[in-house]
Amino acid sequence: MSDPIHSLSLKKLRDGIHAGNFSVMEATDAYLERIANFNEELNAFITVTRDSAQAQAVEIDNRIRKGELDGAMAGLPYALKDLFCSKDVLTTCGSNMLRNFVSPYDAHVAERLKAAGGVLLGKNNMDEFAMGSSNETSAFGNVRNPWDTDCVPGGSSGGGAATVAARLAPVALGSDTGGSIRQPASFCNITGIKPTYGRISRYGMIAFASSLDQCGPMAPSAEDCAITLNVIAGLDARDSTSVDRPVPDYTATLNDSIDGLKIGLPKEFFAEGLNPQVGAVIERAIKEFEARGAIIKEVTLPNSHLAVPVYYVVAPAECSSNLSRFDGVRFGHRCENPQDLKDLYERSRWEGFGAEVKRRIMIGTYALSAGYYDAYYLKAQKIRRLIQQDFAEAFKDVDVIMGPSAPTTAFKLGAKKDDPIAMYLEDLYTIPVSLAGLPGMTFPIGFAADGLPVGMQLVGNYFEEARMLNIAHQYQLSTDWHTQVPAKFA
Ligand code: GLN
Image (cartoon, rainbow, N blue to C red; front, side):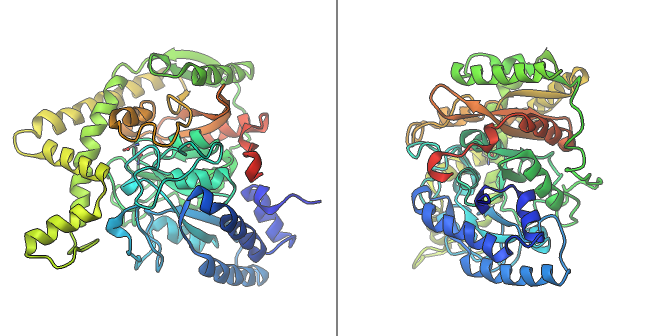
């Protein structure tokens, strides 16, 4: 018997479609059926675009038959985090503020995937405006982790991570501002990459903190991430921070040798704060790299302990500015019967935003206000530069950096909901990388004593995505952690 469609990698899906083993419609229906069966339990999708997916599948089947479409993504289903504007599709950002927002245009990445012949299955649940590490701040209810449905999937791209982990889609696009691809990927046993800041256009991706936001693929394997990155990376004139630099074929170097690879382990990432069970899995995987000829070196990132506090000045400051457009006039929910303009602004924003978003808008507005700007925002920017320099120093001695993606495995729903500081510390190891604008990825390396998945974080120098994907792919060629799926979803 042949393997079920949902167990196939993107490459095998594509080969199957092009060999005529199954049609795009069959592949699409296979995933739609899984979503119909499992989404109620996982709550990973806010919107399922069943009708438009089937219509797209018919069209793409025709075009492939006529030989008009031959790209690497032709006919491949995918899901989008609900902060990517999708033309004529509800785009909520996980917020009541945008509960009824149907986007009139496609985000850059949505446009690229559509043009490449991909089939949009639906829009993934997420923390409200991408603020959170557990998906519990969503106005559409929490997402459940397929590995233990009493646990969170991580966040903010928790919907995408659960979707891929349960094989409800072969790939999902997430976004990462301080860890939102890497931490949920770690909690859900999938591979995810946040490329270098500027590698992928942010056009049409609803902004949280513009100097940090970056989108990226989440999929079972590094190879699947490479295939997707090929389609979405590259210059776009509509995003002024999008970088004009050639995009390599990320699949071309997957099989390069990683012999003699110099791996740096930041000593600060293995100190207090790291759950010992997670640490044990990380150390075992490092030994596996060493056994394959890698050279392990300790490096130091002396300012990394300042990253979380710096992030919680910079990100709220930028979000307070970005979210000012949601005022009930220009964008977003408008309250009923406003008494006057002030009442309209106040009540629309009060009703539209949830507690975490309000907290950040208040912190950010405070940090940017006259008299405090120098003390907080400017100071934070200076420390950000020091953090960047720490990495530059480290990369003089090593090719890549490895360490944990998160200090813990997936925690129970509700466990950290009322403790923002504990929640913020989830991103202890991912935020420094975001502040430096460096590419970071997570790939599965095993399970902790509690039975839950652990992901390795891999950090490269600027624009080293191809090398990172190559390293993870080589690991995945000889391990099968990334192919593991919870029994119920196999
Ligand atoms: N968890 C972090 C936060 O709440 C990061 C979120 C993200 O990367 N979008 O801000």
